[in-house]
Amino acid sequence: MPTGVGPATRAVEQIENAVNELADEEVVGRSLRDELVGLERSRARLDAQIARRLVEFQSSGEWATEGARSAAGWLAAKTRCTSRVANHRMHVARQLDEMPTATKAWRAGEIGSEHVAVMARVRSAARANQEFAVFEPALCDVAKAGTPDDVALVGRRWRDAVDAELGRDGSGHTADERDHDQRALHFSRTSEGVGYMDARFDAEGAEVVEHAIDKMYARLHQRDDPRSPAQQRHDAVVEIMREWSDDQPRGGNRPHVLLVEDVQTRQGDALGRCQSASGYQMSPDTMRRLACDAITQAVLIHNDGVPLAMGREERTFTPDQYRAMVVRDGGCRFPGCDLGPRHCEAHHITTWEDGGLTDLEHGILVCRGRGHHRFLHEGHGRVVGNANGTLEWYSSDGTCLGTSHPQRPPDKIITQQGKDAAAVRARAYALCNRALPEQAA
Image (cartoon, rainbow, N blue to C red; front, top):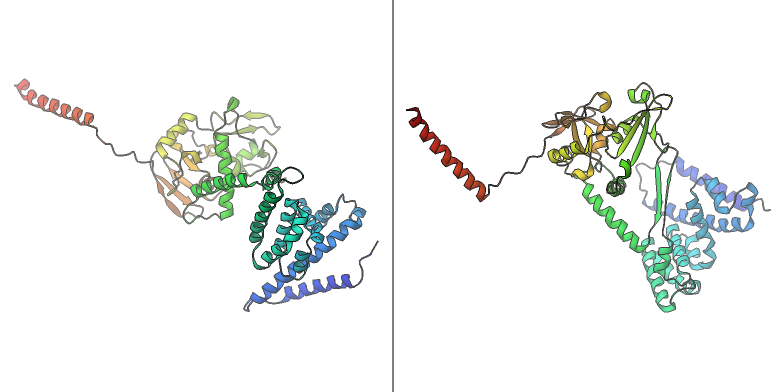
């Protein structure tokens, strides 16, 4: 088995030394434009050399000597990247021998790693290797002059042309059907409860998903929004999912979210069990915010784990109370927010744990999508006042953010029938007034 010592090892050491020199150099106060272009070019060339070695590493079987099941598994373990990234890098590397023009340009730094990844994806998806070999130089020219998106667009047009000329491939599928077959969505959670989603949509699914996210994004967006675009897309997806859940039948009044909290944590005496039913721990502040929601049920347990109270009858506003808030508030009561009731949850002005009453004058609607419910529960601010009248909103540092009031009912428009009735009443009052002196006499 080759030991890997020799000129290549010295070259790797020289690369590390060069990176150390770059780290020691001052970057403030000088032009970095040319330097950045050179570094990007060098990074592409280095990626090409890594890919070249990955192919040989896989072929040699060296990865198995350390108990790995595959070269991709070894790569994920040693570089601490995800399995998806490791498999993708191996997939690209394995195709380099069949893409000589792209490989040469990549090693020379003429195209970037993303360009090569797109070209490999086009070749793999087309399943027309002989035709791709003819097309590859032209696609490489696109990569030298354009972006990876340009390469993907031209590659897709070529795939459509191949389908039209050759008909369906050996599997009997066109490019659209292959994209549909490769649709997938993966969702996982960390031990802390944080979720990660990785998905691939076919063209039709991508249109539907993009349209839905764009519409909800626009609905939840606010002027001078403090959230980043990525955070707003996240909130849009969560709101779409929440609306879908809200529209489902409530089988046995079953809540969407079940929360578990022990007595000492509820009272603030300790940080104990405070988690979702699936076992993911959360902060008490988050627990209190989620427990405001009518589709969430909080179970209070004794220190030995025995349930004490279900937190529904006393803590949560009834459907009738919620409907009354909808009529009174019209939507989120945060100053300037115009989100309607569909995006809102009922909130205790004084928290239930602190003695807040579950009645109408102590409950208001605040929105999820723009974070105003979270604003009140995560230590960012507070609201004081009577929900049936004026509410004053404050940030955590005491700055007044404004006031809000119940929605003003629309001005009445008197109908002709109403006008006639008013005229009749006026004449009756006039007759009564004239009759009174005569009766008095």
